[in-house]
Amino acid sequence: MRCLAWAQRREKRTLETGDFVNALGLSVEQERKVLSRLAKKGMVARVRPGLYLTPDRLIAGGRWSPGENLALETLIRDRGGRYQISGPNAFYRYGWTEQIPNRIYAYNNQISGERTIGTSEFTLIKVGDDRLGGIETVRDSYGIDVVYASKPRAIVDAIVDWTRFDGLPRALTWLRGELKKDDSFAVEIVDTAIRYANQGAIRRIGYALELEDAPRRLIDRLETAIHPSSSFIPWNPRRAKRGKVSKRWGIVDNDRES
Image (cartoon, rainbow, N blue to C red):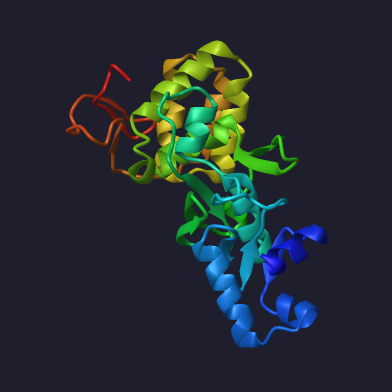
């Protein structure tokens, strides 16, 4: 408690190995045991070995956990990286699903795998710097700037990473809904697809724009981004590849309801 009170008097939101050794005269072994006990009792949250988040005030008789935004921001900042939240968190944020995610999915340029910080669980998807972008930043009630995939980027992610996010054919339904609501969305999705989508996603998005009678100039822009191919892909990869064929996009429309 003395160690934690020392951190809070100095408004230290993070503790690192060596802080108690230098300031309070603990031995390295004593400090290790103190930090381990504090983490096990839920009085601090371990971000990684040697780095812990601390509450801004003592928690009387209870466990403490940092908010998921603070935890994620601290984890990625510690590595000097960048991140953006996408997947189910973005789908819920934009009102495309009512299912509340129980973990945070974040693309980033530093870490891959599962992490737990306090009570928050994260799936971290490491990508190259060129795969980060198409974002919007929102300041939460604690003053943390939280980075989300934008609407068009979230749809692109859902189509590109469809096996991870169960994104198809749902994302194509969301896309066509957004196109009906806002004419300017067609421009945004084309720009985003050309920059961040793979070939399969570009072909599906192009076909969706064609079905919604989007401006010809936008459809033509997407078509020029397609590499020549003699193979056809299904509109809905979860159904048999039978149905109307679009030679322009190399699509088999096997899911007219989407």
